[in-house]
Image 1: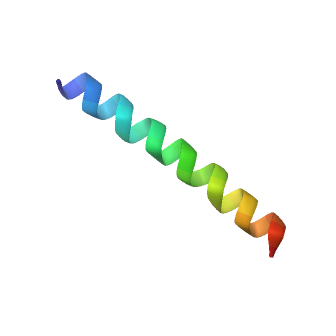
Image 2: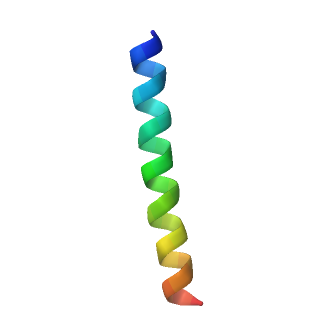
Length: 27
């Protein structure tokens, strides 16, 4: 369970980073 949660959090962080980069490009 811990590994699964850790992987999920990492995936979410990567997605957030992509969204932030896209937002910066748009703005």
